[in-house]
Image (cartoon, rainbow, N blue to C red; front, side):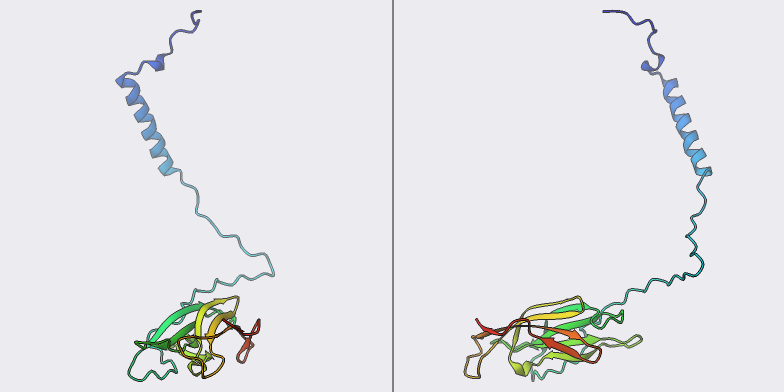
Length: 193
């Protein structure tokens, strides 16, 4: 084996003085960095002829608490079984769509589907539209709000002679706001289940 012409490197043999010098150097770097801070950031200024608008504050969707749903449940309470939110009319304020039925101890009570809104400054939300009436004897199985559209799959009955336990018709529907009212469209014809 050939011997190195360079003498043994001094830093390979550590002594307390070496560690003290390293600690002092590190303390100096940290102290110096606390004095040398970058300047404050500045937002880019708009070019001539352009305006910037402040970002819209997020608005909470209407709550279902304390809402008077147009549903006659007699001695039992109303029960919200599904809900979804979205800006259905494009005004920047979200609406809440709720599927509600009477909380009956037996059977499958029919659902009502209601659109709730809450005006700025109002203390309580209110029902502004009924998409499905409970008197139609429909049960909502799938339900969503997306792209300003409410979609639902509903189970119903082909006649009054069909027992409430056994819906025999499945219907898909969607609703969109046209500026004056919610317009219902049925993508495919109702079919038996």
